[in-house]
Image 1 (cartoon, rainbow, N blue to C red):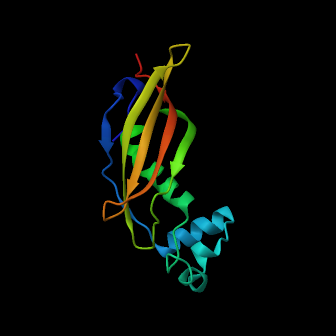
Image 2: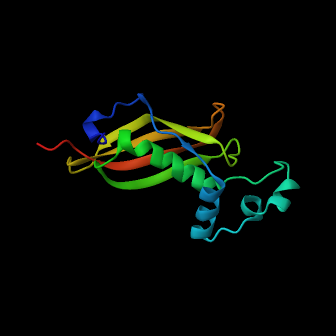
Length: 149
């Protein structure tokens, strides 16, 4: 399904994203390797066992990136000019290997650009695990194309 053009977003609407993803140990390891984040809480089972969590946590930036990716088909697939910002990021609960993540986006603001040729849309993205526990939330602001013609 292609993304939405600026005109198709409505302030206040919540978009439930259909795709989900189960996070594997390999996902977390590769993300940490690619970003050179060697935090032992993500990678070292013995270290993590001695923390309040008792096991390794999935990298929070991976969780956020996954949440963005889950939103793309119903929001900006092929209709985006650029991501402008990610703001107010919070991780209210940890993500562990084997958790299944889903996302929803609520349109909080939209406005045309000064030239009237595009639009700026802000969405509150929320990511939940399989138990419906909120694990990540943030505001995503995008520069969106207007419908051609």
